[in-house]
Amino acid sequence: MKEMKERKIIPCEDADLLAKLYQSVQEVHHQLIPNVFKSFDYEAFRDLLQDLLATETHHFFVAWQKQPCGFIHLKEIELSDTPLMVSQRRLEIEALSVENEYQKQGVGETLLTYAADFAREKQFATLTLNFWAKNQVADFYQRNGFQVERYRACKIL
Image 1: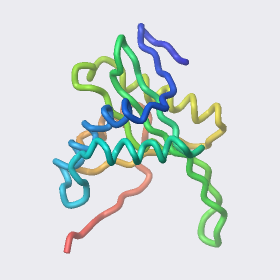
Image 2: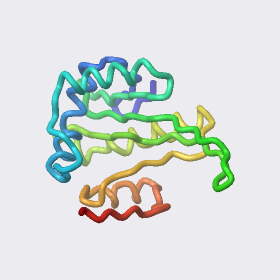
Image 3: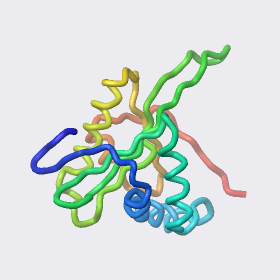
Image 4: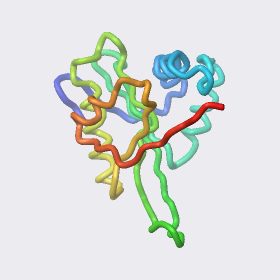
């Protein structure tokens, strides 16, 4: 457990709590890109999270400051060596969210620092993430040491 300013980051295996925390992430994505993301369905999300929690490759951590104030979802990715690319072992941030009343108080930075420490501890070479161009988080990630390594374009037909 890591603690910063009365804030604790703890592993979480509670699918109900995670589903509640994931709601704001799903709602933002659905509002930004409704042709890709469905509206939030609590029971379906809880069931999905229960399945992910049963694996060894998904890790969930919740930030607590008297109550849950944010979370991060990490996924281990291992790619085999191919004729095109060398093998890769990386930890990917699948989701990061901070409750509205806790935003701009360092919770997101604390979660990212925790993820980087976790990645180092598990001997991952890189910590990666993806986010949608319509999501206004690029500056936040760049301030926290993330650099763009590739672009993906999409043409809707």
